[in-house]
Image 1 (cartoon, rainbow, N blue to C red):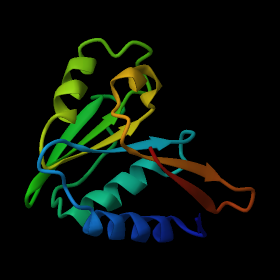
Image 2: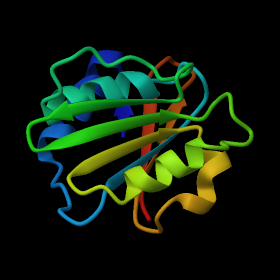
Image 3: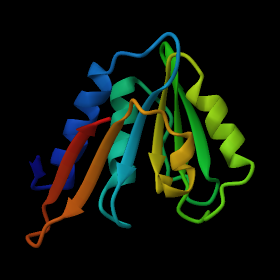
Image 4: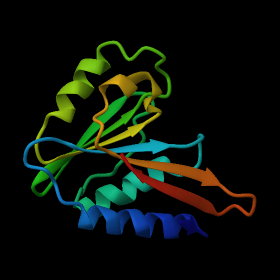
Length: 140
């Protein structure tokens, strides 16, 4: 999919958030892949809006994770950019992956690949030469 503007990407993410069906047994996982500044946090912010999160969603780059509640569930947003070894955050992530009615969004997940469920949505973001964004979806 190609998005000409950041607003187009956000509209898609918000729509996705509105359409997600939560699992009553374990978390729904979205793995976001792409370079710095490609729109991963913008996507997550709009996804959260679609889910019904009412508080401001900010990048967890320095805190590693942030939790947001929405009607009927919780969004947990991780950013492992600064961690080559996730340490204690591995336990936090492992726990979040087992939580029902939860959406887990991961950025820079290479250091925790061994913890990720086989079943997840992997979204790869790319900036094209004209400044538009390309989004590749892969259901694993």
